Length: 499
Image (cartoon, rainbow, N blue to C red; front, top):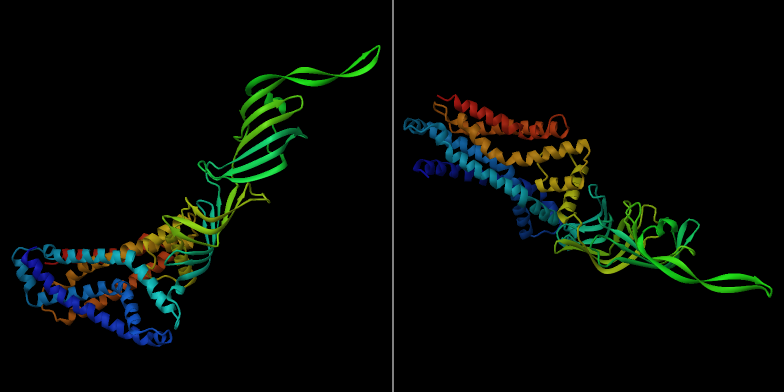
């Protein structure tokens, strides 16, 4: 770094420190006067009050750092101009843009800091502030983080959550209930000791039904029954007889009536009958059959096994007493699980588990938090600044691929506002240069008055853009980037015209 760059930064950092310190003192004083009664009612001590304001610093910096940076720049550059330092620097062959490189570099650093604070630090700190504000005298702070009666729908994956209560900090669940379609590869496997063709369907005996939730489910749900009609199995014996298998001649005792001079006599004569064994085949709908043996005369099957792909409307309902996010997946305790074979299944297959890990659920604790965050903001006032993080907006859109137009306009504006907001620190450098380094003697208060006027115009344009963007009258990117674009363009044009 050149000696000139160090000098310019040193002359800037001193007024910047005073500006930020002054803003901090004024903010603490006025806010403390307004909330002191509430703090006393909640029984907060000095340490808790101090923590509350420490947690509020990231949000405060997002507002005052650009203004303080602008005020310090205008003050420092105006002071350099009054003492003809700018003239001397330019006479030495240093251009305006080269002279402002340290200011632009510091603005870039501040922009990155604000982005990191807003995206990664501010959400957690606001949550901790909320804990303190919700804490009653003698109450547990953790109780403030519970949110009750949450309904969450993942339209993309057709999954529905009904949560009795959710803890924002630990992601614990009370009375969780998840309804989800069966995964790809899910199937029903029906096995029967004996099946007889009756009235156009197979009447089975000794039925065992297993439902595999996925292709690799090694612990299927199990249900047994003595006799059962299987209307889904409508393949008649004549068609089965033509399937691939082995022929087997079986001597079947058949009653024959013999009439002679002694009279009519019933004689049992062993008669060769052609059976089919080890039959395999596939029918419409992807059902795979395996039959031990087929007796075409009696129209009976022995050793039947049929694998049926899960119905598209089949679904799984898991109800737990408690739950939590552990080791990268949801785990429920005290679980009752129901497997519905189809949309109209009135007799689901029940199972119980002491603990059940639900791998494959895409809804993370952060996605539930984003649902709560967006829902609470929608129920409140119109958002006039960037109040949602990029991660919250991204998670919400993953849950809701089809967002109502009015909400989509708000989310789009919030998304670009979160990206555009931190770059205000870089824009103030561009706008401060032409207002400060123009030749002529300047009063020191010129910088103060100029910063106030510029900041006021910037925030008016910002609020105006937010209103247009969230109402859907202009694209979200234009509404969010409009103030930065307008003031940056003005600064560049005016700087280029400096003599």
